[in-house]
Length: 306
Image 1 (cartoon, one colour):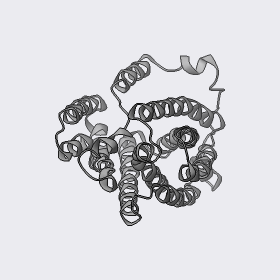
Image 2 (tube, rainbow, N blue to C red):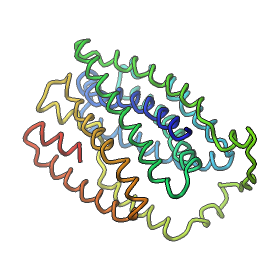
Image 3 (cartoon, rainbow, N blue to C red):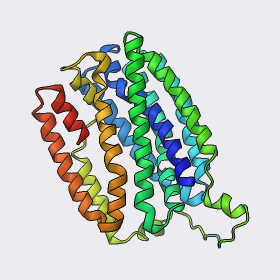
């Protein structure tokens, strides 16, 4: 029940996020007249801030052992930032709103993953993460679909889309209130020895990670060097289709994640996670080839799906 509630929370939050981000690149270019270089720079800076925040949000949630409190802070921050996109008048204003909103998003991302791990057994952890990821990407698919519908009905009113995204965040906060953590379960009558918590900001915290963890971090750093901003996807798709449906490329990203997340999590538990990382690398290479050689919207869709 806990994992299911977390998954619903992720679904509505994901819907809200993609309603904005599926249109944000087009909004910056078509309405605020930002160049592709400026759009990529803004997205890169926002991602940098987000990843730095992710480190500290995980450490803070470990220290206080109150993951829901951190989740609430993240969601409320996100809720108050959403309307700023609707009233933005310059790329700088979008960057500020996006940075603070992403901080709020990231504040809940790491504690949410930790909470899934808390409520899962080692044998079902991959399934739990895959299930939650599938729900989150279903939310992304719904968010993109709703955004396209609003754009079509409102004659490309980006600001209306951004305003409607606030509603989904409010629903996600309601879902969050229904999640029961291990601490809350213990308080209802279960007995379990309380874990002794040490200060995660000490040097011993980093020293506690073994060599395999640092190898995985090094792999992630190298892998992310090949990551490029998804804000440019709709702008690229706009070369082949109209503005109102250019963000449909985000739907194929969500469809690919929905179809793959749970099966990969399930079989990674059974057959080993390393081989599935290799499969993912191959798929990313094929995706980049598809984008580079694209001469039609269908090749863009294939790349987004992969």
